[in-house]
Image (cartoon, rainbow, N blue to C red; front, side, top):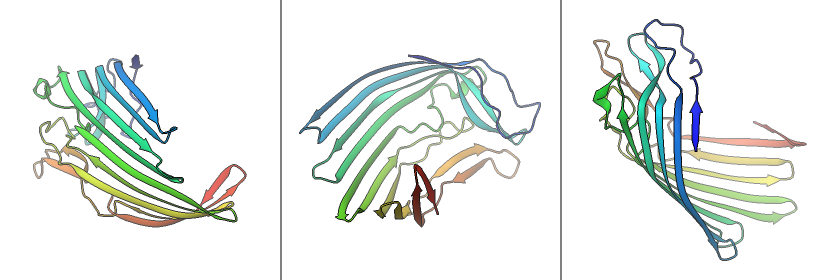
Length: 239
C-alpha cells in the first residue's frame, strides 16, 4: 500500500523567515503480513502481524529555537518495521479481557539537512508498547447495570527531538480505573487516570538560549473525577 501526504497544515505559528514552509510530498510504502484465529465459539481470539513502512520525506513537527516557533520538517528516508500481537478473551458472561503488545524498529536512513541523525530512531516512536485491560458489566435488573474497567499500558523507550537523537526515556507504566452505573437514559461514572501518578516527558526540545539547552514538557499528572451523562434521543449530554 502506498500513501501520499502532499503538504503539512499550518501550525498556530506566526510567520518567520527562518522556518521553511514548503517541502516535497511524504510518500509511504506499507507492507503487512498478518493472521487471525478464534476458538471456543469466539470466546478467544488472536491476531498478529508483521509490518514494514518505508517513508520518503517523513514529516514531523519540531521546535525551532531561532524563531521560537514550531516547524514541520521532512526527513528524506525513514523505515519502521516490527510486529504486533493482540489476544482477546471472554471467559465468562460480561467479562472481557484484552492483551496487546507491539515492537517497532524505527530507523532514519537519510536526512540531507542533518546527516548526524542517520541511524537513530524517529522521535516519538517507542521501541515497544504493551497494554492489558479487563472490562466487566453486570445487569442487576430493572434496566440497571453496573460496570467497571481496569487498564494498564506501558510505553517503552523513545526519543523526542532531532537535537538530541540518542537521548531516550525509560519505560513508563500507567494504570487507569473506571466504574459506573447505568439506568435507562442516565449514567454515572467515576474514574481515575494515571492513578499511580507516573511521570514521563511528553516532549523534549532544544532551546539553546544561553541559559538552558533542553526543555521538557511533562505528562498529565494523576486525575480523578465523576461524570454524569443523560441521553436525549441519539445524543448524549455530559456533566
